[in-house]
Amino acid sequence: MKSLLYLLVLVIAIVSCQKEDVAKDIVYPVLMEIPQGFPNIIQPKDNEYNQDRWLLGKRLFYDKVMSKDSSLSCASCHNSAMAFSDDLNFSAGTSGNFTTMNAPTLTNVAYQPYYTSAGGVATLEMHVLVPIQEHVEFDFNILLIADRMRSDATYVSMAQKAYGRIPDPFVITRALACFERSLISGNSDYDKYYFQSDPNALSKEAKKGMDLFFSNRTNCSDCHGGFNFTNYTFENNGLYQEYENVGRYKLTGNDDDIALFKVPTLRNIAYTGPYMHDGSLNTLEDVLNHYNSGGKDHLHKSELIRPLGLSTQEKNELKAFLVSLSDHTFITNPIFKSL
Ligand code: HEC
Ligand code: HEC
Image 1 (cartoon, rainbow, N blue to C red):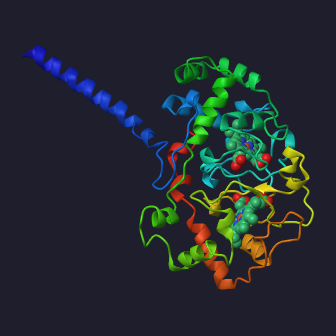
Image 2: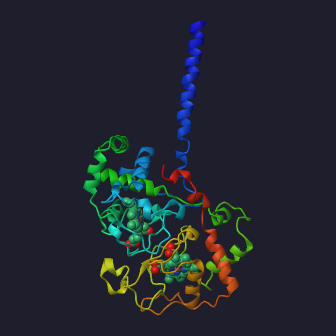
Image 3: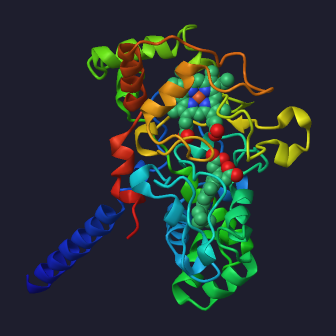
């Protein structure tokens, strides 16, 4: 009888212990869940999502070990509370240097066909090398980051678990890309209205703004169309008559590409100001005044950018719609925050 009791206690102990382990894990399966109405994400064969890879990528994303002088992490410029952007026009890099571009949001970055505003980088894995080497970002070398990680027992065991090898460039680029791919946002008021069929999720004002956004009156959706509010093309939206930044030309050297920039997503736009490649427009009002004016004349300005004649009320409606593209659950999700 006594031994039976012992057995029972043992069984209960094991079961409750297992329960605790499962409980610790339940937050993770929601990762990589594709929101209603969104297309699937194509994952590279050698880097399919799993929790060990993701945990390693997240640790690296928040670790200053990545920068030469150990002063910066990816999160220094891509802050979760700002939908993984920052609130500066240019971001502070190592050694007091500043970036020459505004740090973009990483919202739904997995869906992009190419990376950076000039579009020169094909995959998220390859892109990891860009901030590491950029002098105004980490100003470092991926082999030296791997060396630093190898002297850290936690990193060594995490890399073994995730990829079956010790920290090296393969592990660093794959793990960070795995984390970035999970930054999926599809729970804005607009998503609730449009994809989740909740007719009350948008205010009357935002619905009028939506009609304007998708109309020939504004042409906004010609460039910012699709579920991610970008068609990923390169356009000139008439910000300047003369640009300091030559845009896509930097990559192609083709005159036709001077001052063209990748059309950015408008998801989480309420959290990602200041706006445009150089952060020169501070507020959504400034952005709408810019488009309403028709922009400055540049040889490459798109024909779609022209004076719109919007009233103050119409601008307010458009602003209400843009704000409705912002997903509060994404920027407050504890899963994405540093430990
Ligand atoms: C000092 C600030 C800074 C740091 C640190 C930084 N970034 Fe960025 N990031 C930027 C800026 C600025 C751009 C825009 C560059 C461009 O478009 O040419 C950018 C662009 C990107 C893009 C391309 C997004 C797009 O829409 O094409 C990705 C992805 C990205 N960063 C991920 C990372 C990761 C991962 C790290 C850490 C390994 C990191 N960044 C570190 C400032 C930073
Ligand atoms: C011809 C294509 C085109 C049209 C039409 C267009 N945009 Fe844009 N939009 C762009 C490009 C390109 C950029 C980025 C420019 C840059 O980085 O300097 C941009 C940037 C923006 C940004 C800033 C995004 C950020 O993260 O910095 C907002 C907001 C925006 N557009 C809203 C609108 C609205 C609202 C309309 C309609 C009134 C509109 N756009 C029409 C191409 C277009």
